[in-house]
Length: 169
Image (cartoon, rainbow, N blue to C red; front, side, top):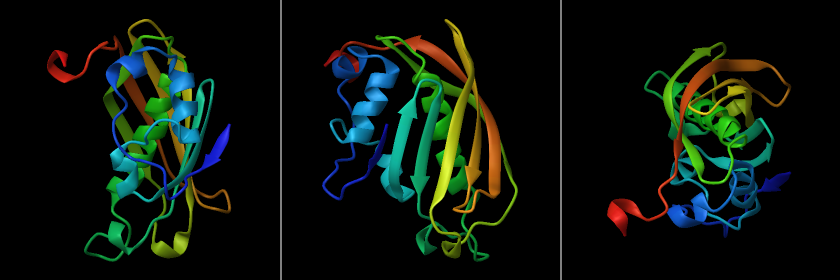
């Protein structure tokens, strides 16, 4: 399931009770369809669209000058954010209703410099193993021609989602 991000799409938080009421895959698909808000961090990296299937998630974004470091290329945090999101959501796509995850650790390797001339990039996350307590995934960041820009791995803690808002609200 793939959806293009519309300018009217909202960025924000999904209420905890809504998040806990659906599987990870259902949540991701509803987010990508615009029924639920996208993470505010995705607004910062220029997120354009995404898709989610069981164990496989894609995030696409366009790097620009606003993502540059002082030496004239896109900051490594751009690639790290996209890969962390895609890999973590690949784990999330395998979780049943009432469960979520948090990243315990991730490692990325940057292969090629990214600039605003790179064009839209594609971060792919693929779940490797998702158990009751821990999930692992790998990711790849590709340019429009399919060339590898960066790759990584993650370990996520699987946890029960709270059914109420922050601090019980």
